[in-house]
Image 1 (cartoon, helix red, strand yellow):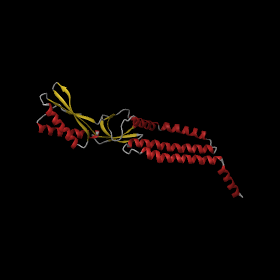
Image 2: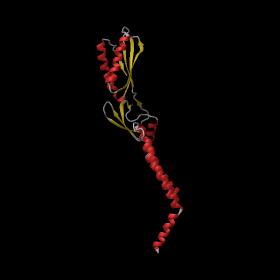
Image 3: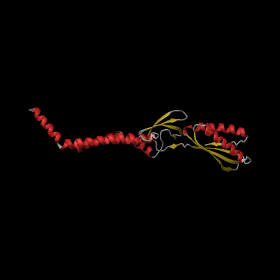
Image 4: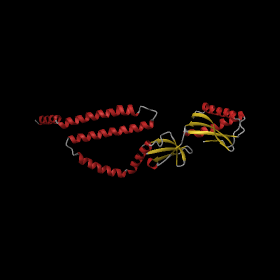
Length: 264
């Protein structure tokens, strides 16, 4: 008889509105989780594989949505079964306040990390000047950033909340040469174009290059300029190669610039 009563109670429970409501909540939650995982994360977050920084951020947001769906589903099911959700949430709120105070530095780092991303301070692979030192951004997360010094190869791990401002090193550069007034312009143009052409063909780090001609007239002569772009962390190597190629071409042509030529 006891078995019969247990079966009867089970049938009553399964036919109750609480059970039906729980099933509906679970079905809806499962569908939402499937959409987030199969469509939003796979189809949206990782569509452009070249933008890993943005993909990581979008994926993180969608993962948060997954946890949010689970939490809401659990709360709804508990409420359907008569559990006092309000008192539980109040208790959780007190616990969250205590945890928040204990982890306030971590929260500051996370908020700063979001701010760094939203305002495009930098991304992995960029060259920046941190503490008066040129560094490569090697790693970025919501909490910390890792910089690697170009000069010493030392790696610095910095909490994001400590990064208030930072200088991103540009990838646009120029090579300027000062020639005396008596130098023939057509001859100078020819040798400068040869330098630009050689750098384009021989230097793999140069992305774009263009000979711009005369850019300034000074009391001591005429300044000619070659503009180019290159990866910031390769700028020093490009400058060295510019100097070597320029020397060879100037020596061949016999047209020499003044000593105040510079690369910037």
